[in-house]
Length: 426
Length: 203
Ligand SMILES: Cc1cc2nc3c(=O)[nH]c(=O)nc-3n(C[C@H](O)[C@H](O)[C@@H](O)COP(=O)(O)O)c2cc1C
Ligand SMILES: Cc1cc2nc3c(=O)[nH]c(=O)nc-3n(C[C@H](O)[C@H](O)[C@H](O)COP(=O)(O)O)c2cc1C
Image (tube, rainbow over all chains, first blue to last red; front, side):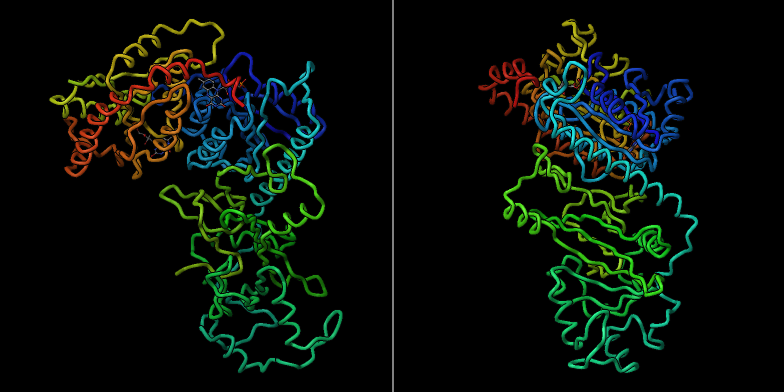
């Protein structure tokens, strides 16, 4: 794997350079890291276009060839350095090599949490349409107290920091492979019909899928068993009521979408407004295309096609639902006994109570300084970007798809559209 | 009459932000003198280890020191302020502190509809950093969207509502400058705090 490391400080002596040099050396068996210096480039000037210069053309080629980019940013006056900003401007003016490139943001500073503001700005910059890079969501690697951090051989002294860095880089490598998978399969996989115009063996014919009373109308056709009728399962025997009770007792929201992209079921335990995904009984039966705004369709299609093709077995996307929660939307492919794709189980789960319970019971603590080890996300009030597959985005004129995620921008309280579920269209 | 500096927040040769400041310079000439300050041709900030700053920087700093207030009109590149502007601000906060408690009005122009809103939001955070510590006029966003079509050939803003909005904010800014003058009790301490401030030492 070939990665590029951008030294986001023009200083002669730079800790950010040192961090990248350390990564280069320490992870040499995992990937090849080539360092790029912002100080070697001219300051961006729109009226003196140097895109064709050797320095910028070389940089362009290197970025294009790299599987991913690690940017180590210093923080100057609460933002990134002019040198780093200038490099990004050159790469978003006449050429756009960072487009769809997986990027990992790291940063060193003299004190704890030092580059967090710069990192947040950098994320916003990378997301802008001219740059259009795909910053790995959630993760923040801040190396605080950097003056104490390295030994005389340029190695990180602290074990925990080393472990955390390693975990972050591993995650990044995985992220790169997911992103590239999404990229390459986009064109090859057959298109998904979100309007469910086809059918599968279990599709109930001649019922209006978009009817508010689809369940009753479909029931009139097929006369499903209900109540205390026994059903044999693998493995056991339950009544329909017992199956219902069982599903409703699950500590998460479940949605079932069949192989024809029709929304067939959710465990209805709450009012729509109290659910993470605001499902309504009358939406059941809908083609899932009706449950999402059109702008999310491409991403929904992409993920379903990958689940159907077996390129992915499941997809997980954390979605902000306010403080004190860590809600993840999970898309799990379903298969029949012959292994054929038969639909999606979407389950939406708040992990935070589980994490809290685990910590309480074991007396363990999250490590990594102020970094939240579970999510890798910093606990500060930065709004985490959903690393979504299908999530909706509310955006201004510069909306652009984010190949991995489909989610974009950082509207905090936004309600995501689930892949298989209902959106809040009201 | 108040003396203001208008910093052209881009190094581009043709700039609608420069046009905006030139318009303000003319339009408000009865109320204030606005001297335009360019940030072109500054060296890239590289945290030099010598104490000596480029002369052009110390000259700029002296002008800012002497001014009653500063208007910064920022372009928007990639949803943030241009590197050239960040560069100027880094130099102007490196062992010199001309912005400390200086009343600053932020404006911006962009080709798109949003008028540099994201760049302005970031810029405000920048100006709030300890070594700049500007006194940023609050609640006064002036966004000039679709800036390529905003001016007549002789540099007038075309839209009357936009002019009205700008006049309101500018009048407020002049008041803000006066108020800021009265807030000088802490100034000496703030200056010292900025000068003593060391990223090395905070925890
Ligand atoms: C003009 C200037 C402004 C700075 N502002 C910040 C800041 O806002 N936050 C911060 O954590 N560090 C700030 N610092 C300290 C830098 O983060 C530090 O010097 C950084 O450059 C270390 O990274 P490097 O060794 O890779 O250059 C500032 C330094 C300078 C020279
Ligand atoms: C590298 C680059 C990035 C740009 N990014 C943006 C942007 O994020 N938003 C925007 O409105 N205009 C963007 N523009 C277009 C204009 O330069 C921008 O609107 C600017 O604010 C116009 O100000 P000026 O006329 O003073 O140069 C970009 C231009 C360049 C060269």
